[in-house]
Amino acid sequence: MARAGSFKAAAVQRAPVLDDGWGTVEVVLDAIRKAAAAGARLIVFPETFVPYYPYFTFVQPPVAIGARHMKLYEHAVVVPGPVTEAVGNAAKAAGAFVLLGVTERDHGSLYNTQLLFGDDGKTLLKRRKLAPSGQERMVWGTGDASGLKVVDTAIGKSGALA
Image (tube, rainbow, N blue to C red; front, side, top):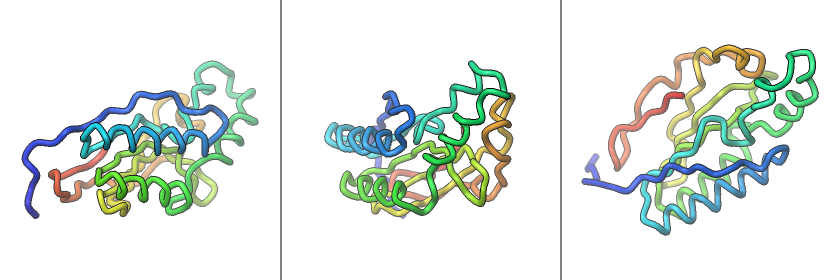
């Protein structure tokens, strides 16, 4: 595959919309449009940006987080699903690669997952954090190693780690 020489990358630092998973997706879509308009070919978001990082595990005792955890579960991203479709469409429209951290919901568990979307809108990589640390273990399951790889793209070999 032919490689692009140099390219512009954007590291997005925006606030999620707490307790509104789709609100955070709207923030993502807006950031993709703005970064692409500024010439970015690679647009990267923080760890578990959608729906939001579960900060409550750091400020509340374990016995008190049940309701917050269930709300996070309700807003978590299903892959594939409406969130991946919307972000994939935005990546394609922008002609950019997008790396997005999400809390993924799958078979009753949550995972700290990173998704790489191609400039064609396709999901190129899904990588789950292998070993959540500390109190993160109360939120996310242990990932497997299936996403520990790189994919060949027009901007170079790409992968993800948290």
